[in-house]
Image 1 (cartoon, rainbow, N blue to C red):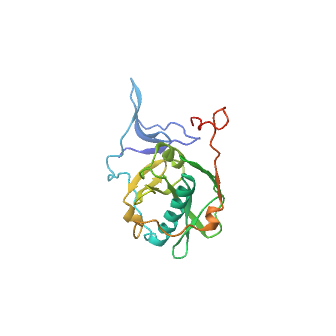
Image 2 (image 1 turned 30 degrees about the horizontal axis):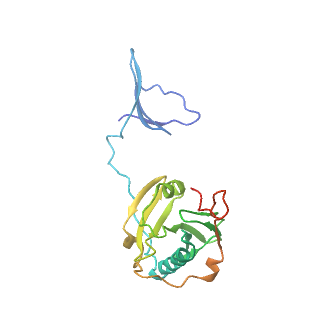
Image 3 (image 1 turned 90 degrees about the vertical axis):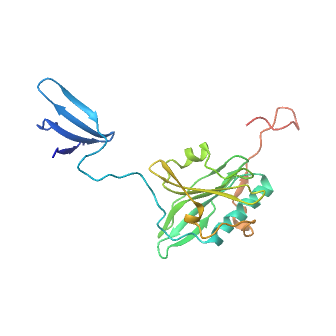
Length: 222
């Protein structure tokens, strides 16, 4: 069997003529002969079983009533401001028990800016839910940029001017894995959801739309 070495900070080349070397850049096969030395990328160790990238939702499905609260909030923000909004999905370890938290945020037509604070003891952050106003639910390039370093569930709720649409994915180590919404939620609200919590709406600040230099002119290009 060909030996395997880890390339740490204190690594020194072994005496083996052939060996595998695991580095931060992947797995390599190193060979040394009297006439050449090589280090080539290896796809894996042939004597081991294969594997593939995958994720699965292993927790209980999230209650439909919780999603309905989020949909109601998102729809109210859309009706009032024609804007997107964000809610954080939390989980208490006992149960587990899912909760929603709406952080203070600045909302606008195409985005919402917010800051995530630390979780209270006994609570973990599962992921995010955000709206796409009247657009279809999907994970946009901006969403993928925002979420690439945040492991967890990311849900988009769209078409808030009619029957809501949903897109779900798990992001792990910068990789995105789509999930069917009903793998995650008990049911999907097909109407306006529950009435928006006034305390959540109070945490919104609407981004001022820039105007042209002429007083009363149309919005400038954003």
